[in-house]
Length: 331
Image (cartoon, rainbow, N blue to C red; front, side):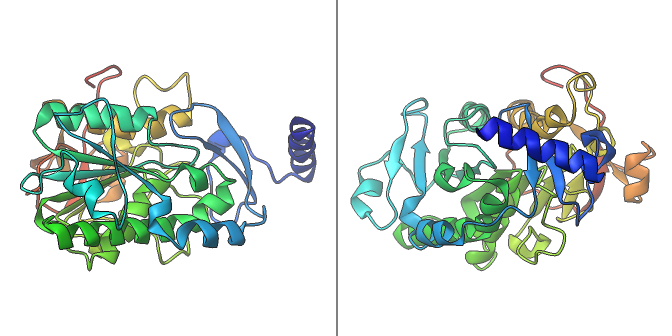
């Protein structure tokens, strides 16, 4: 029945002339668009007028403990320890070490704590350095319809920020916090940083989602942390196109990532977390500074080099940057 209903929606939208080819681009105000789930190259049809389940959002977000906080360290790289917001014993009895850097990871739509993005980035950060990695699992909300998940993103982010503040009361230093979010998670970690009073050391947004964020003041902003970095890999449909952070990187111009041409836009979208994981391990994706976004799109950047991604908490350069990558790992 669900498949028949979806088919009816597609046929009706096409007949009305409102459903475009997914490669033609998205603009704010489009009713229908395509969006992939995390770790899934399948594009899902989204109706921007689908009713938002406000009751569920309120029930889920009223308590930050409804989120899962999964701790991984070099002592437990493959088996999560569950931290519970408000439960001091769950922290005291874990392997977390507040003297070390703590990296928080946030997935996007249809994602979960164990998806490809979280596994790749957890492995990369733990191989690179002896850090704490905390994976945020907000899958109960993220796996609702896109309009509901999107509407709840900012409040989940504020919940994550309150969790960070609580850990700070127990000994965590904001100066050793790195928030990393993919797609909807890019805006989520921005709200988390904002909730801490923008005291977190670094925020990295990986192809922050574009649909329905055009007029939303809760989207990621450069003031959300001490240093906000954004990686743009699919700016035609899925990811935000304009600069959002202190440093904005447009690998390969921001769309059509090498190796993705035959697969499509969802592949380019997910390249952001794959580039991030590779850069954390190798710190090799050196980008030229650009005079403008237009120059970044047209491969006319000749400025000095600045690394895209990596795990350096002390990055500070601002501007627009472009790096041309390879088609295959490590890119």
